[in-house]
Length: 616
Image (cartoon, helix red, strand yellow):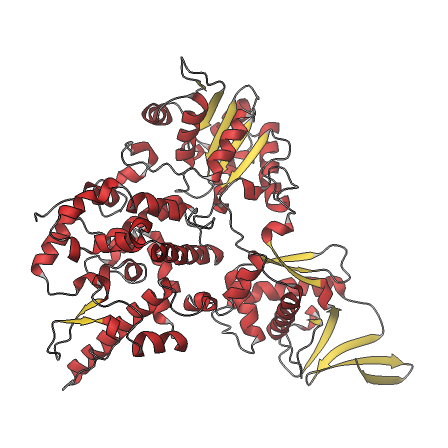
């Protein structure tokens, strides 16, 4: 068979920043053959808002979320232009001064005015244009990052319209409404998740399905390098048409990986996602690279290009500087399951030889110099790697090879569901992550919720420096005037009953989405990234603290008796500050002093000249 080049591989290469044609990933420079039109919740919401006569639609979020892409799609869906015509209008008529009407000869109605990027304008000029544009005669779409948006709307040139938009923007964080009256809509794309949706409906799943399925891979069937091509192997492992259930499970684990990053505070844009997926499928290789490396290398080089290894460790063909241009690839190694030892998993992948099928391309490793073999099949565990090293260098090489194989097997085990499902988050470094997911998925029954609240209370005690002889169901708050308890005695400001402590997902804080019009989780592909710790007690209004996965994990680690204070320093400070504010508000004025001494609650009261000490 001949050496064949697949044009789809080159298409994916244009999404990577190491390729000269990388500008194709930017909406303004794309051609129709490269564009990937994902129907997002944001697109549906913006289109419906424009059709219903909205005066202003604000698209805010980091660069790369697809604000310009959304504007182009709206021009197509609302006004009847085709893709190339809409892209031309984006480049020529979207600076906030032109009105774009429906295409002649189409049944479409309406008109839009678009600020493609308000950052291109001076602050005062932008405010003047926004003020004049918000007249309600046409729908105005404003694209801006959050900082620039605030600066424009609060500038000296801003008037009543700018003030109304700013108020809607700020209150959307408080009440979870994207619009108060249907006139002004705020679509915050920083809330958009590429991991939202089950059963293969997330943005990431749909992008992978588009790139791994269909006739684009037909040319590979005639290529003599097919059986040794890591790009084709990645496609086979992630394509449901090829691997069926295994591919669906692997994509579910990839979705969990992305969702976990989002839940520890990292915002993944669609641009980040597309670059990352192109990298995970190709490893930066093109067809000619595969043909050249196949001819000139010893066997076993393909394993470093397996998608599950690329996610956490770069191949030697990419420099550190090249990898820095892939933002998501800087974050994924934090969650590397290959660096975490879980006994249940390790015993199976190392000692059992029936976990993975033999002869799989991604499990073939170069044999060490001390071996008589040319290649090692990792499906057999690590027995073949361990040889008879005779010197320091050979021992170091053997240790490096063992580490490399074991890490690869752990990663493959994560994606292939080796081990129980409750170990998924432990694989990623969050031993209490399953409890976090139970809250955001609404899977906690009343008994489990009560036990979890008890753990949270114990963690809050530890963060304050309180030590009890046995776990207390009551939340004790140290008086902020005395700071964190560092000795065996602490003076208390308040006691909060367990019933007045609650845990809920962020979307519940704003109320049920089916009862609130223009709920923020209807504007984008949404996942709950925070758990709300709510404390009521004797307070006039409940006090809420948003816990991302990192803070939640910090509190439960503290409940177990130890938390690395240097690593969690910022999170501990936030929690302590929150508890201090509640303690300050709850402090009672009486002649009785509550304290904790030697792990037990006591009270001190003064009766005339007599000081009485009792057990609380």
